[in-house]
Image (cartoon, rainbow, N blue to C red; front, side, top):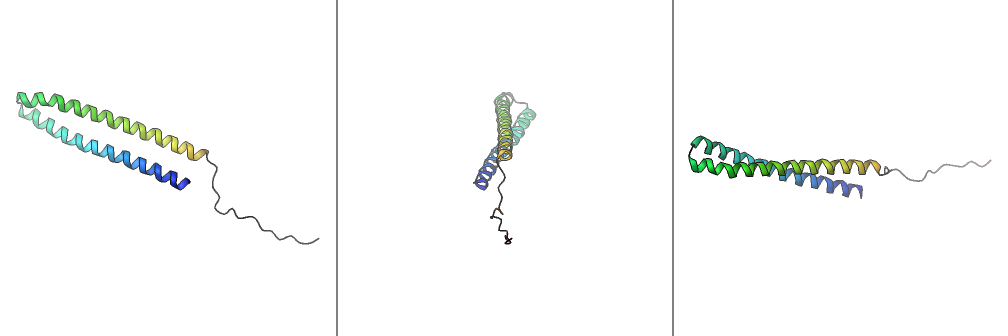
Length: 101
């Protein structure tokens, strides 16, 4: 049961990190386009930057929320694992020899 729980926690972290990485990759492309538009100095491209910068800001907000969720999930999982009693794998009964008196 504990291994299954840890596996789900790891999967959730991996999924969140993949989402973050996708957003950061998209932001890199947005920043490149924003820079190109800025250097072109054409009214159309500069106007287009307004929408691109909004999209960039929204993506940054998403990343902040994903990291906040990751932090909360991590804290909860650590707390949950620290409150569970430890599992003893060598919990075989103690077989002592009793000497007749």
